[in-house]
Length: 159
Image 1 (cartoon, helix red, strand yellow):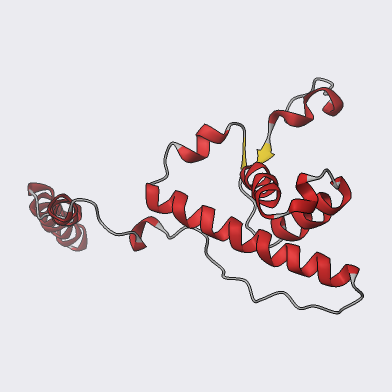
Image 2: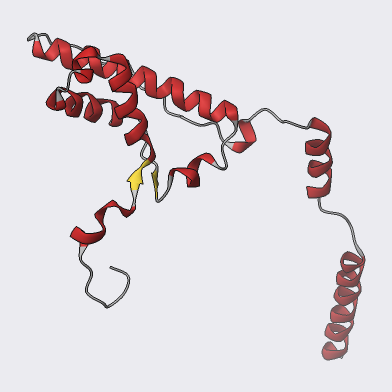
């Protein structure tokens, strides 16, 4: 891969995974008596449809993802997984009956961007915004002085 050494994928293929895989399989099990009875083919079909409706989030350890998430993020993920699995269950069952079902449209974002999230401490956020504004410093006046010197040098060269 990134090194020149030989790498055996078969030995280490499980060192990364999609964060949603375990959540989807558990949710499918919780929602479907058929999956609870052990229908692995049905589980695989439902999981594939549901996972294709969620964004990929590849991680090494689940804690890598959950450590930096707020309770609101976790709640949103749980709701999105439950919806994706419910839609997938209906879709796969309808296909088995010979129907031509349509899945509902996808929502694009799964987790709001940090800028869109509600602020936990509004006073701290306001202070940070003021700190981010560029301040006029002595460097600005030094740059003006440098500009004056360079124009003086230019005048000397012309004479």
